[in-house]
Image 1 (cartoon, protein in one colour):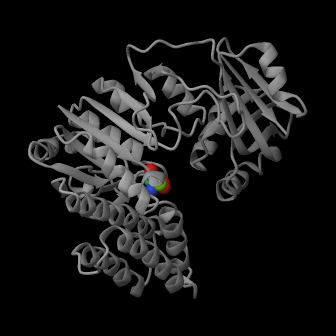
Image 2: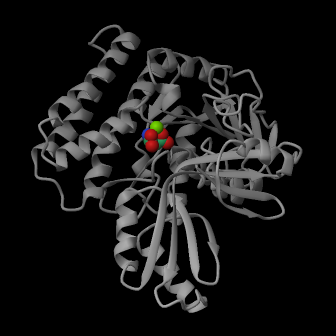
Length: 419
Ligand code: ASP
Ligand code: MG
């Protein structure tokens, strides 16, 4: 049976972590393992800056590129000692592809440029990891994820063609019979062979697509935390780890903004009934969290999710007419047109209040559509607190010292906007 392992940016952030990755893999040399990696450390952020500089024809373009190159080179020097190792050429060739692009004028579609440039991060990391596994006598093949994950051409948010993707899986299964395979998370390919990305932090999602497509025994996501916690330990020092979680609860938590797992990850796994393990990269012997259909939910532990940088917009009619259903439909269409994703919504007779992630571009777009017919009032820099399986007394403690702007309760979930 195949196991799929995903290593995020943290797990490939420097030479030492690549060595740790290889150590983990060496425990599994008798198994079939597909390894999916993210870009190293903060490389994706750096490539985003590079793309912006290129499109704006900024003077910094070259400098940003040079620092990305130097970072990868320093990691490789530590891992491979000599520059004669063939991986140096592979990496140089990967950079040549961007350099060619940077010499041309940008494509009019910003998102197209973004995907061609930003996807390079995963190509670099996967080349380095594959070469280092081979250096350690773990027979590994590097494959291009674009040959397997097929998407449409919605750049930066590629929509995966699951049927076409499924058809390419037997090839991968075959390779896995004799070799370990390393590939890239976060990216896919269009039918014209351009790169697409699947949305920031999307490599969990890639891993889930591979794991379900291959009918893997399990997917393990190696993280910088002990497993899935009920709260961010940096904000809540008493945070607890879940030993197990049902798919549905993990999905709810991701939906409300728990950042440990990308929200799109669960569905493919649940459909194919592939268990997900979230395990600590630095203590691989620990159990971590198991997510599957058999897991029991411990509702004694409340899940606390805090989303900062929230905006609350209240929309009301100018002529005091009710926010009735037809107006509600119209408003939701406007919100969707502006590509805004709602984190919370509340309606009264004369107004609709919506809470969403602060994004100036999207917000201005919405405001322009609405201004003519509606009054719009807004607040920024708010936090949205979501508590699943809450107890009233705990909520009071969490909210103490803050101003409650709006709240909403269902049987299981409390959502509170705080200032
Ligand atoms: N490297 C990409 C990002 O940082 C994808 C990922 O890490 O999942 O967004
Ligand atoms: Mg990353």
